[in-house]
Amino acid sequence: MTMHVRVRVPAQLRDVVAGAPVVEVTVDGGASGTATVAMVLDGLAVQHPALERRIRDEQGQTRVHVNLFVGSDNVRDRDGPATPITAGDELSVIPAVSGG
Amino acid sequence: MTMTTEAEQTLGTRGAIVLVGTTKGLFTLEGDARRERFELTGPSFAGEEVYATCIDSRSGVTRLFTGSVSSHWGPVLRRSDDLGVTWTEDEQAALRFPEDADASLARIWQLAPGPPDEPDVIYAGVEPAALFRSDDGGRSFALVEGLWDHPHRTQWQPGGGGLCLHTVLVHPDDADRLLIAISAAGVYRSDDGGASWRASNSGIVIGFLPDGEDLEFGQCVHKVARDAGNPERLYLQHHGGIYRSDDGGGAWTAMTGIAGMDFGFPVVAHPTRPSTAYLLPLESDEYRCTPDGKCIVWRTTDAGDTWEPLTSGLPQRDAHLTVLRDGFTTDGQDPAGLYIGTRTGELYASTDDGVSWRLLAEHLPPVMSVRAAPLAG
Image 1: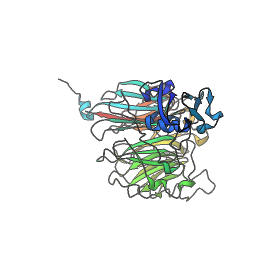
Image 2 (image 1 turned 90 degrees about the vertical axis):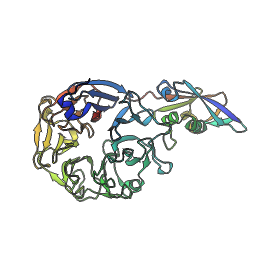
Image 3 (image 1 turned 90 degrees about the horizontal axis):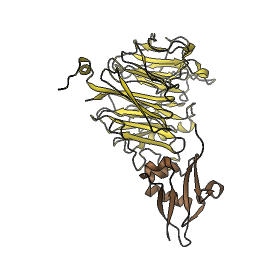
């Protein structure tokens, strides 16, 4: 089953998606209509590669100071990239409060 | 009708450009042909650390490149064909490790033009230490696998700034002869365009290791520069000691003309005058600031046998400055424009081969890299 997942883009990254606050990613949710965060990011790598590489490095690791939330849950507190995501969920990209 | 002054005709330029990469973005200075008046703009990429910039005019158009990194969003390579008014980042990342390399790009340390007659060739030195080559003007880069596969690589240790490939020198008479330097692995050379590499550190003493003499690799080379008149002559600033090679890097000899000044980061060769080079030594690897609160550039005009201090216009009191490996550069002209950016945000400039200096900008973020060039046209 084809799913459409909304990815909320932080203000700092909107210039790489033509200013859009939200982009929609198409993924295959299978018969259950469930995908994973990793599948959404894989879709993002094809549809919006400049955004995806700011979230993950070449080895597919989420960058240290990037948080991903499914709804109000930080995926690091759930199953990381394997965190399930269903139609209607939103994936939010939120920079960590860090740096100098 | 446009009149040009004699100086402008001599320089053959319509101006000058200086790129200042800082820990908080890129600043650009555009100057007149005399290099007297400069206008500062920026920052571009505010908040990103800009360790590498490149000004490339080989194709007849001045093209700018920057390599920056965001602490949140990672590294990015950009280019500009309009002197930095707009910047382009390719949709597919121009610079990234291939999947089978099992590595991720941490930082771009060096962007170096290839041979003059191959304007689409550009080299990139990165962290973790690797060399990339572009054959399409920087739109895409390929990992130089001959170096990546070198058996030493797994034994290389990072310097204080990381395991970085920070110097790329292409031999002016033979584009297949490449020299790179890595902190803290040392100098490596290739004679076959990068297919194979050999360590080239004979004579460089590693003072920070108990058996630091005659080691094949592991030297913490900070920068290497090539002499303008003799392409086999190289100048090298090591973590401890300054060296010269007269055989293209085959053997290195310590230069001892600056008593007690072994530590520093940059070394700059005069762009046109043989046997002439510049150093900016710092006090010890513990303190890493200009010694005695005095900012002194040292110049040799006899290939390092003797050195003279250049101080006119540079602060000689309470000036505890740090200048990093790419914080000192020349603009390629004669007389040479020389530019020094400090970690305390000052930019000093000389347009008379270093004889006199002036403050061009201050209160910038910490300066990581400076590049300068005339604007053709």
